[in-house]
Length: 466
Image 1: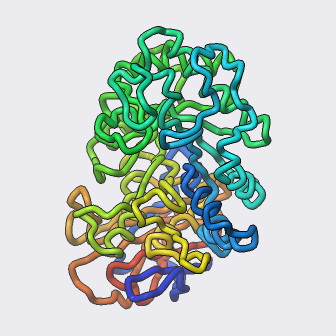
Image 2 (image 1 turned 180 degrees about the vertical axis):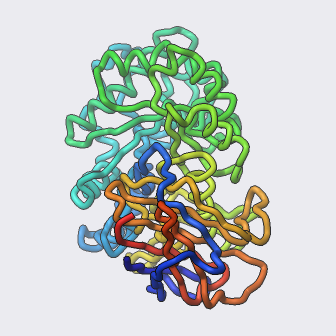
């Protein structure tokens, strides 16, 4: 067996190689214990970012040439970059702007724009096509922020939402469901397969008026999926999957109970989506995992690095990404994790940004999230028995424990990847960091990392036969 280590630290290391070695026998003083024969059921779907209209607008407004744009794609999707393989694509726009069905009362969608013109004008469609070229096994999920205004109660602007969002006449519920299915069809006609859609982005966002929203109370989510969207997707005979919630984790228990315990609605959905804005929510995640994960999957569909009082330094925001992956994957069973906007749309704190000269820079969050996305591969499985014997300070529901870890194994059982987040109260570097890897049949090996800095994110890739 052999091991390769990589680390990102507050002292400036970025995906830097670190000394790692494998020796026979159990670790004498293990900081992390991993069992390779305890494997979760759901494979990892992928890691990636969202494509609302902002990346297209940003690059389009700068009038960058294709050559000048290429570093953006290389940073996120290239082998020397973050190696993203997942996109969340907003259905039309996230603001009060264009849609693909702007003719009021067009209940048959006879005027639907199958050319998705608005997505072409802001470079969003071209962004997706470029990523397709770079990532042959790309996975795409679509999410809608708002229907066209003519479908909303009182012809409300796409920005903000009445409650309920849709007009009460069932025809508007039917046409909105038909619109979502037609959007999938339009993109597929253009050579872009859509793996899944969500019922609605943040259906319980009752507050904002600054961007497009559409409020669905939990009972309304159930009714729309059961009576309209689910049947429309089934009638279209699409393989596209349907996810519910697509909102903060605190809403998950009540919405999951309604939808997954309704026999008809549950038959239409593949799983749930969650956002990270109200932090860890361990109890909500654990409840979903225990009650529903055996049949319905979970994915983290949105995480934006905005400035918040709980994360008031760049490095605190940087640690949040790997910490949240561990929380959602280990405690909830999530199998995908998506940064909100790859360029623009996160309050000036996007992982990649544009400099005044038209080149691109990267924040600390780009590198800490990359400690996950570069090494934990699509199709691998999370190991369900990863123990940290002495985690130090306890997690507080917002920030990491003193020491956290998760691990994955590939289907061929030839590669184990172990992610470690160290956020201890001591600032000292851990000169000898031992990981005990149990192979089964009483056999162990020890993986030793040298000089693991505090507040660092480290990843070790162990290859062999497990």
